[in-house]
Image (tube, rainbow, N blue to C red):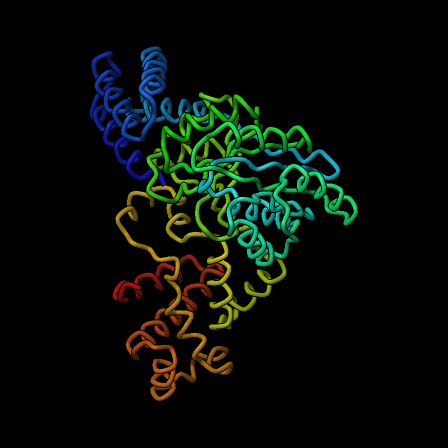
Length: 447
């Protein structure tokens, strides 16, 4: 996410490295590179120019403290202005209504149907809501079926009217159905077109006027760059929507839409899609996104994702097992499953401060744990509970069963054993013992 922009911005700040103070010359050189980075990210020239002029004005009015370098000061100013450019503060979706009616709009191919299901999943799991999905796209042949498949996947009912080609009527009837069945949120997926046309705009406007939604969200493919911003403006002029959803932000996007859409339509970005999985939906926080763009990570979001998978009772049981050195492969497998539920592995690692640059050229597969899981699942229940009984013949059988070789099995067992010892020492709070353990592990092969 924003890898190219982050790299170019980092290079621009290096111009100020080694300078003892800020001058008009070194600031101008730095901001010239910042402007180029923004233009390369598909930010419009007008906004890029306004942004750099604003940063320059703030930078020239600042006195550099002895404890802060000019480069650090410039990073802070750019960070604050980037966050402001993207909206400043987070704006949540409205949940006032009985039921809450949410209308989803956008072009075909922007990811509306997938987002509708992701939003239903988010509201169900994280907000405790009971949502109903409405299949209002009556033109794209696979749209209704796609929504039904996704609805079944997340355990949410999908309202359809077989054979009907009247989206306004479907939307209106779905709300009456929701009231009858006690659904407290109605999410209406609507038809898109390959391009903006009058028929499309009139139809979506009629749907909105009829159901009077509490929240209208415009879904846009962030990979379309500045075109996404232009489309957002056209839709806003007709629909006056409440917020923007950026999809495919994990793809090869240059980021221009995320940076400038707020300043063009004056509507907040409320969600970003970062993958195909139903959990791959993030609430948009401008300040956290600015952190990530400038390579500072996003530790708050990482902690929040971890807390979502955190079970207090299970954690206490696990802590006791670790302290007694009883942590086994069943526990290890459970931890892997929790990490996978948190989302894309590379994206998660990028949230750790300083890690974004380190992993940018690494191809980290979402199935990075599949071989480890295969090895553990090829063990018998007794072997998982007591790794000490894993002799040569057992390891050979496990390698055959998991489609790996015995060296991989040996490596996993060795690393697991060392990890278990280390966790036991940490659980007991032994600082000195921990240092000794680290010293003993220096010769350990990299996993």
